[in-house]
Length: 468
Image (cartoon, rainbow, N blue to C red; front, side, top):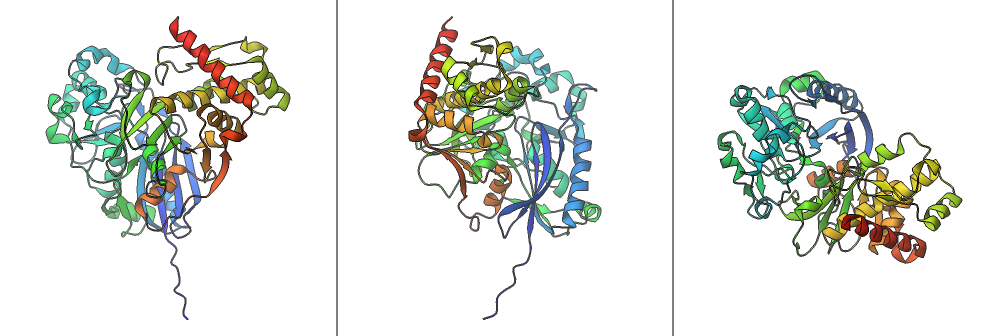
């Protein structure tokens, strides 16, 4: 019998996180990552306000695609980005204003006026957040502050779709980024929110496409510059945490939760019934790639980790672990007080941190991050297995404390790969992607009682701290 030859085919995933930007190559037939290039995602502080360095990113993408395509013939291209970012462009897809860094506090200048017109949480599932974390707050501030430049806007594009438009020439928007605390979307009704009318933006909001819609073939000039085939498909694109969720959609049965870790730790629960959420605890109604509302909660765990670790030696001994558990050495919330389940609280140690070894700090920090994650999972009433994507999944201390505190099985899947890139593969090729191989599992029944006691003591101290 003649065996049909499998033709090599590769997916290029452009993945823009808050801290780093990557171009990842995924082998479509083998369903695995094969290569990647990355650079830091810098914020430019000069100019009218802090903004992302889109020129450097664009050149990095073109150079990377040229280099990688010479080794891996690219068939498809999709862009994945962090949320809370929007591009204001004219008909030539030129930016009329820079892409605002959502951590900039400029929108606070008009926060009071904006609050008077923003839709209620019940409409959008979007909590009121600091700075520019609500896209609506960005847009209102830009309208008021830069009326001339804003008047030149022809299209308002969510961040993945801005880059997709630059590769394809086609403008569109998509629900996962719109549903990421933007204030611009109604998850229950599946349409733009009333804020669009309030801001008089009806004419500049593009039509909605699905994340896995092919917008077009790649633009001819980009094909020429990068060496990509002119038949390369450019897809609409998706929000990063929802890309991680795609890895499991259609595979897992029943209720489960995906915790995507990076600069942000985002917990998204697939549950049968969405309970009432508290917008004051950094919860929101996200929208998955297929338009389904999903309860979510998050905090800036990766940022908190970097603030505390500060170049310390991350190795630890069993004696140091015993010290942390036995003495109740704890870090209490919140290291980043403007986000997360304990907004407004300021982080503190139960002992003088200067008396601790690097190993003890690493252990207590890992426990803190796990218990902050636990708080987020409590709020959204997570059920079933917890799948951890990203760097925290490689931390056994984090996994074990999370499993002990939640009494749920914690699973790290494909830990050597990027959850977002494999999620993109699942999104585009759902019929071919196999069930993810599990690599590390933390079972509640196997965790020491001392972990559970530590978690109980931590939550008791947090309750006292909040009550003060």
